[in-house]
Length: 609
Image (tube, rainbow, N blue to C red):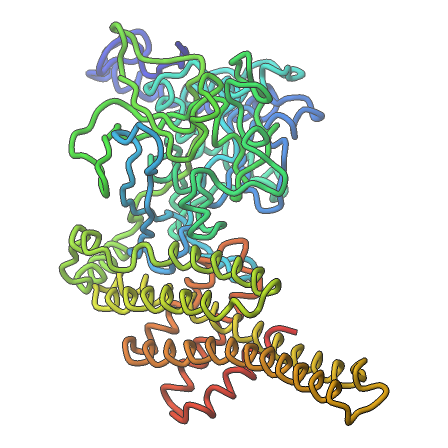
């Protein structure tokens, strides 16, 4: 079990410097002496910390950030150390609009620990994103790597500013390994030491001396962040890929892998091709997840801040238990390497704090929910406008919670259908009749969800926008297919038929010409049918959207709909934007269906060059 040095254990309550009383004049003089001594110790720590424990220059990168990225957030540690963090965006522009997501899994036998359940999450920090980007919003800061042995040594030595930095040295492989042998209590003590350091003058001095490389995250009112363990929801949202993946990828058993990669490329677990010896490894050697986080699965199991709650379908059980560990470790099998994997540990085992060589941590930087009186007043006013929400009723009613994932499934099915279309166009009528039925059924459920409360309405709008963007993209593809069919027909007609080369008026020539005309007409009609199918459905969808939602709500969700596409958005975000424009124009313009369909085909086609 780890040995995190506890602070403040001098000689009992109310005592100072060996237990001398603070009462009377002697006590006041002693208090002044204590204060002066405290200032001297702080000055000594500030002078010694940046250099005494700092690793050799050549070790700096591999010690604290072995896989640097331009958008990493680097924060100082005591004794010249550092810790790299990643911004985990929750993609909402209003603080009270926390993001809902479905945690857990329907797979496996451990449903008491990981049955599907609905969660909400919101980041404490806010930014506008990089110039020219569509990023920004609320986010939380999650450590890029698991805490290493060397970072543990630096935090353990801090002792609220009264400790002594370890001697400068060349780091060993062990120093760069993830720190194990932690209990929940020792892990929390580490966050206490880190928080105290972040609030100290020494941390600001380290930032000032870094030439802009390091930072101290803070609120708009300059409240400095504090460190803590991640919550269960924060960990799972980030492990799944957050806003960097699509809805279907988020709900999968693991985050998406790069082409040709397997789970062995991302996680250390007990098995061939990974860590068959069951030993903890150096951080950052595997591939990162879509948010740039390393070792989210495997290596050391990560301790959570909140107590364990069992899962029931749709929600967490009401009884709290021990502490939660997430992600599995080198002692787990490959089958445990899923983002829903979640287990409970007791706080004490045989009268000792529960620990293990595979128990480690990944830290979070956070802020109080409110940091000023003005913010409290503002949020009180916003809460008053929310009305009486009933999350349980919304979730139980089903509504639109799963329509995005279902839409992704239908899109995948349509892609398969397109591939079959290239092989045998004649079979498409039946395939697309089935697709039309599925999309119509989906639209019906989306319309049902429109009657829900504001949160459910916004989810329905986002799904509507994604469907509208998909339909616009399909219109463009089918228009291109129609153009190619006409071009192909022109080329075919320019080539004389073999039966007509000797005598154009012969019966053989006339029969061959008739057969060719029928085949070309069939191909042209099928291409026109597919185009009309999509533009007709697009027209229905625009009409339903206009009649169901006020345009101000539609336009307000455009950005969120585009963000929901994750890293695989491609040009679909442009089609969503076009759909919003068409909804606006339809609401305020002509209802001539044929003229509108011609205009929509032209607009969607223009987006695909």
